[in-house]
Length: 170
Image 1 (tube, helix red, strand yellow):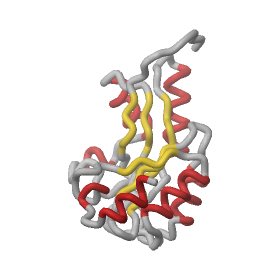
Image 2 (image 1 turned 180 degrees about the horizontal axis):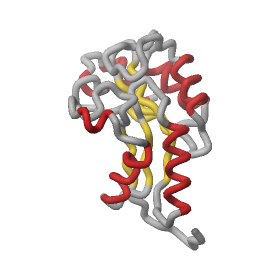
Image 3 (image 1 turned 180 degrees about the vertical axis):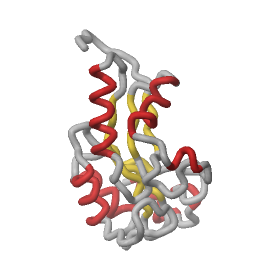
């Protein structure tokens, strides 16, 4: 690919794989999907970049990166950005999105530094660290932190403490 100048990309920044317990919401056929099939669903919809933001897990990242490379060699436009959705101790969900060179191991390190010791993929278990600390860990690992689904369950704007919201926004 040899692009000159700016270009718009179709990018989904919040995706889950079978590594997240809630992926497919009971559809057993989706639980057995391969990384290649998972990526092909995005290609079919014209999506060119996906951030893998499974709940408290980086398990599928390396497999998806391999499949994305194979698909690109076949002429498809698909790029994987490693990430994670960490559940803070206040039950605020925080996305971390990283450079494409980041591996599953590096995502696991962010999860460990968040002091998450629940089952990987479970969005109901929480880390021992606050949302503020998790954001710091994501940033120190070179990622971008984004509060997930801010106006829904486990979102930043559902918090009753203006102090918490102010701290996170700083």
